[in-house]
Amino acid sequence: MDRVFIENLTIETVIGIFDWEREIKQAVSLDLEMDFDIRKAAVSDAIEDTLDYKAVSKRLIHFVEESQFQLVEALAEKCADIVLEEFPISRLKLKLSKPGAVRGSSAVGVIIERSRPGSRP
Image (tube, one colour):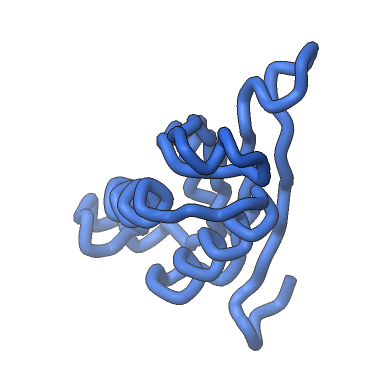
């Protein structure tokens, strides 16, 4: 299977468990790998035949900017749900990073892999 990817999609949002985190916006970064057969688009050279990564990005930016999750786990899971439900992919790998969350590290976060119900992993 082919993969369409989005790398380092950085979005400001309210995220965190501490009181001070609930009062500010912090950056999170998303990396996505989405299974999608690109052969039809490769032949037609038409946007209608491919996975529109700009549309995926815009949808996630809008959702994440408006969200107020405490845990990166919850935000990552909901982002994966949105992409699987709203776009024609069978599987995705999503990495959600929270830069600067732990002193001494560049980022912390989660990596999840999810499939559309009924599709093979």
